[in-house]
Image 1 (cartoon, rainbow, N blue to C red):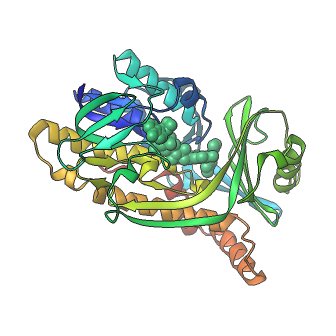
Image 2 (image 1 turned 30 degrees about the vertical axis):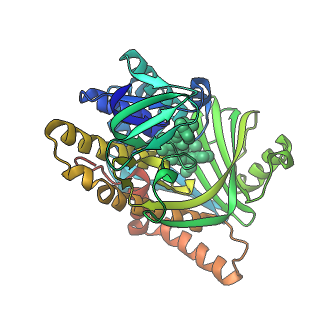
Image 3 (image 1 turned 90 degrees about the vertical axis):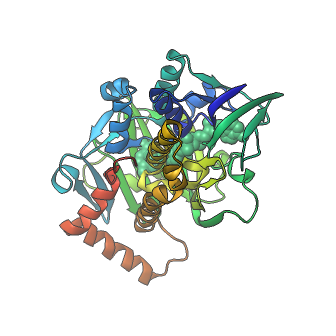
Length: 389
Ligand code: FAD
Ligand code: DHB
């Protein structure tokens, strides 16, 4: 079997790449180790930057997102007994975010690929990459796929990054001493906008998916286990951390899904080796406080699409050669923003009273200075995608 681009992973990065390449007349095969049901049900991100929304709409896969997604023009930072709104419409006019579940984006992309006759294979076993320096091919479940280029879109725990010979990649990483416990609950949101809450007991986030479904996250110790968090404890802790301003009451409901995510920042450089190009979580991850992971995956895929279109169109490797450099500027901006939001809002056990005073002082600054609030807003809604980025 032969294709132009062999894509490993049917997450947002792999599926969007396959779709954008199809629109440019470039063939691809997507190999995914999980089932279609599994990837369509996996609950993860929910915040889409303006550039991500625009990309999906321009690619013809934004119709349901525009209908069902929830545009948001601000977020609330809650701490010290008060809520402070960061108004996007005032600070970054014309730019906003859309709350729309990642698994809905994945569903829309899979439907679009299959409707166009795309080759997306689920439940493939034993994916291995070979001969990445010259004539790459991928083996899986007893089959062989020859391709001109391999796109490693298989997330943080995939096989693509480890296929790069040792010593080639430089890795930069930071582990945080806590995790996020996330739940999806059948209950109307208790707030119209997202609430990022900093308390002495730790961070809490109130998000949503629809007028009838809410999403919440709690900062928990890095070694927390779900069995130690029965429903009542989760709701109790969410109430304690969110019901800190007068008049706010948290509505509760049936918990439909739950999970614990470690918090980590990670970048592997360069994001390419031979004819392998890494995109999305395969190359970098951010702590989720800044809501940047999915949006970075989309940004990478846009750069890679342009580079592959130039290569297959004219044979020029210039953009492909510069792929990693073109992506990493944005990747590091997002790393910094995600680290900054995380340190601003979480409780660090090692923090002494002095460090806590600094954190609160910084929160006061961000919520009272227009310049500081604009920095937050500009990064949160996402820096514009440059042409070809
Ligand atoms: P993935 O979505 O991880 O997709 C990789 C795919 O590759 C998977 O389907 C996997 O099954 C497959 N795969 C893995 N190994 C193999 C193999 N060996 N062979 C074949 N297939 C393989 N980001 C945001 O932008 N905003 C948010 O609000 C946000 N919130 C988040 C909240 C949580 C709780 C979590 C966990 C993440 C959040 N993120 C957020 C991050 C976001 O979900 C990821 O950055 C995003 O999923 C990256 O997409 P991807 O396609 O690169 O990787
Ligand atoms: C969601 C996730 C995030 O990481 C975030 O910062 C905001 C919202 C969410 O899943 O809705």
